[in-house]
Length: 146
Image (cartoon, rainbow, N blue to C red):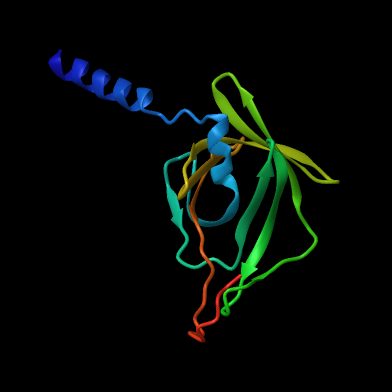
């Protein structure tokens, strides 16, 4: 019986410690994010060692864009004109990112957000774990990256 209460207490502790994202935290979303791993509904993970593209967010007043960018060896990023409109929505103690393009609309739940970590959950219960990315400069030419 003590074991059951112990397990229930620990479970309650984990649920109670879940990060509550405030509107002031949304500023942390801005910038470049590199995917680290994907956690599937069945509990399996897929780790990403090298990424050919990053997600770039630019959000102001809970509206903005997300676009895919490709880091280059000189520290710059290749970009194109393709992007997704993003609206940050607060509902029932949860935070959602509502995306839209000319072709479709979808949402992801914002599970965790800090200056260095981002976790998104899609409708299929797949979690995307990101880390804040920095520019790559392998040339060592001493020039400042942009």
